[in-house]
Length: 360
View 1 (tube, rainbow, N blue to C red):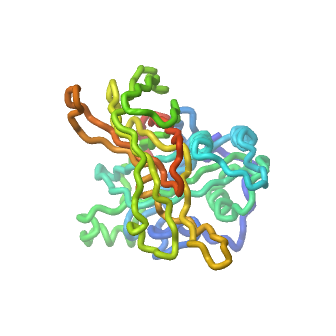
View 2 (cartoon, rainbow, N blue to C red):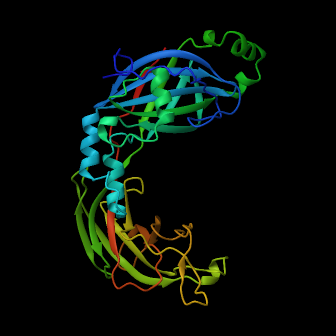
View 3 (cartoon, one colour):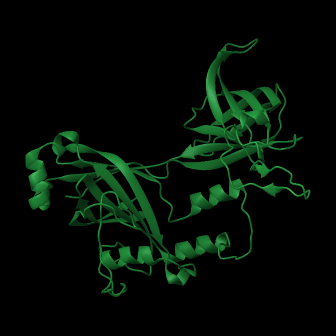
């Protein structure tokens, strides 16, 4: 099912609803003058996915496109059931579970688009997104803004939709051109002679082998889950370290300071864009220092992951070995020194190949 196909299952018109797209706005509010809508109605397949580009908008600062991913309701229901996402209890998912949920979500598609208008490439500026979950999935609440999109584009509400709004700046030379400015104001529809959309998919993370606190000299063998190639990690250092509370500026808050570092080499080598190691734990959050009543309270979520999860490379010469690229990984921060840290290997995989779609 593509959004461009006619369907009897469309939302009724809302006489109070006014559709408007601006360059600096989003699905929740608009800023600046409204752009001129240019209908496109382009359906295309990307891998096993169905996509629809209903329109583009010519705005004062650039071009805006809406890209709509159409997902069958049964696929969404199966995903919700598999993870019991309608459970109202206070269940907390582990980092591994959260990443799997994100990867398996059929409405999640991280895209990196680019636009070529009349042979000129437009620079990508910013984006936003919104999703529609059909009522048959049992989770379709508080979807008024997404409903507005479906109503305007006459999309079938019995399907799930992920709508990506992408904004592209006009080239500087165009912005200072009086002819372009006049055409944009008086007859913007004549600006588009040709329009192509190039789409790249952001790689997804795939978890692999996990192992607990290793010792120097340990060798961990693993198989790459995408290429099926066999690799080895050799651990050269694994140490517990501590940072000072003085490194944090808020003296009323106590921060975790203990963490584990590991230095390792890999054979055959994988780049940082292909592989990284991360602590399986969430670490400890900051907490307000003990008060007179003897109780301490957890502080609000703060950005203390300045160390946790870090993984990088450098070229070093290790004793008894030829020069190799070393990798350094750091765990999350903890209040107490842990006997064991579990590390998880992560790999990157592009879900689909890049494509270029002719819109006009």
